[in-house]
Image (cartoon, rainbow, N blue to C red; front, side, top):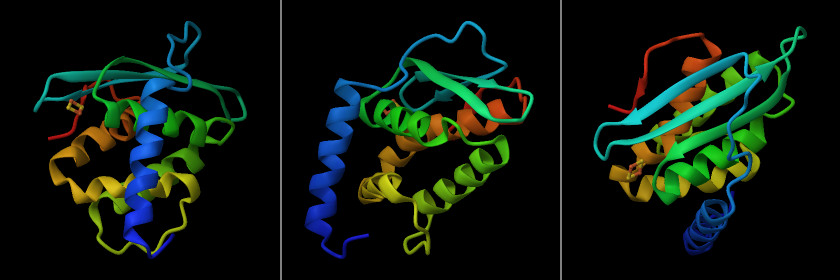
Length: 151
Ligand code: FES
């Protein structure tokens, strides 16, 4: 990751803007094998994450729908890109790594493109927006029916 915080902030804004305007995999998935709803009680926004996992435990397809701010939508969009084709253990490990990135000031992680989301740490109240999709993913992977709350 660049040490130049200005560049990170610029990239963060660019990526959020672009993924919000053109979210990847923003659709209902009729043949999903796993799904979960995430809810941010601070604003009422809600996302549903869908996964199609095959017999080899690979995520063959992933999508999301719902109402959310630009950050929550961009984070969900980036997440779907990142986990498509991964197996469920890898997706789970990515959830843990992202959780660390969102909460730790100095995580020793290499998350590639997803690191741009660390820019949200500058705006603590928006961290819940960025984590909404990831908490939902975690619940979907673990077959939890409960709505994932960011609180
Ligand atoms: Fe609702 Fe961001 S303001 S999820």
